[in-house]
Image 1 (cartoon, rainbow, N blue to C red):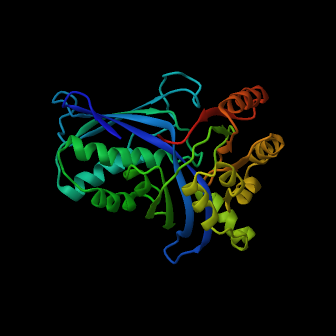
Image 2 (image 1 turned 30 degrees about the vertical axis):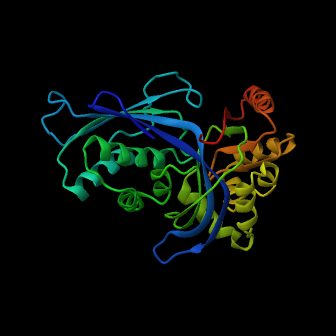
Length: 312
């Protein structure tokens, strides 16, 4: 997950994720929702370069300086600035760095370069993965020697999905708010077609709509898809995809509904919206099918498109 560059910098990969199974079990007293979800990491990833703060970059030795660059395929420019993503305390990367400083008493700072490939408001976990990579990378850069368990505990304070990205497992069954993690073996892989409508979706808005339409009655057992992943039965996995948030999201986004209606016409083994949306994914028979369908989708101008596979 991390690579030392020169003793002064660490290079981190922050993978995207898919939810192959997502059930909302009910609203909790703390305002969150109890979930049961199967998450898998993708080869699609953001990259972070974390460097020790140079003496000339700031008078404050504990300063966290974040810069963000946009990269293909989901962003239009190849390597231009991305003003839509904040570089202050609103960004989970900065909040993760500050939390690590606070919890450990570390007074070191860092220069962080974030190269964004994972689209925002997509349900692909880009912000959560970036935060996890920051915790792991700065733990190494600052020589803090925190264990994986300690980092997962810190990650849970920042967000529900973040602990999943701390460890190196490809897939996990996550419960609670998403922070209770049970790694699961995956003995299959498949080309993945990713398609995101132009407009993203707000996670709170999707959960609110879920409550309004009372989607809790639509439940799917997680056992069969866990067995299929363990046994390497890709075709079975494709037929067992489920996401309780997809219907609420389609109520909120006509673009998403239009996209899922189109995907339904494709000869895909299975397709689904991931997380709270708005990105959809299709599990494909082959890379040839994935690339062919990606070209077709680009031509419709209905979505930004990429092809990936599970995290190696």
